[in-house]
Image (cartoon, rainbow, N blue to C red; front, side, top):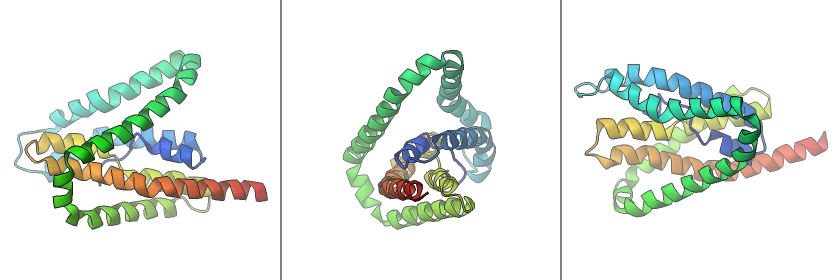
Length: 208
């Protein structure tokens, strides 16, 4: 699920923290999200045979939960740009707080399950680091492009992976917890890196 889903909604948060190109990160997020919404319903049923779900079951969930809010947000921004500009900083803060609260709540509720599945943590960390390195190298020589692609490639899209895993494996909470653990690990790795990159970009601009 994580491998075939991209466009995590918190990509711009990390890029903003790094003081890199936020516009590019939003464009990458939207592009990856739209591709994922149409790509995942085609691929997942072929990977997971023997289930009662079909492509439309996945597609309608993704359209309702992911694409509809995105379309509404873009429509509001286009129709009321002034209001959108004033609301955006507060929405960004609310999103950051919500993510932290959600992660904390899930860790508290499923601590035993997470500890029992601790053996998969090295796999999650390795997968994340490899994905991030691939994105970083794909950015070429431009530091801002490297940052945006490293974040976008590394984070994947845990919310979509959680949604699809919950649809396919409702009786197995670990199926949905793995993408969540991936998101938590991603944040724990990327946030410190974002501050380091922020200092590097600031130093580089001063040198110029």
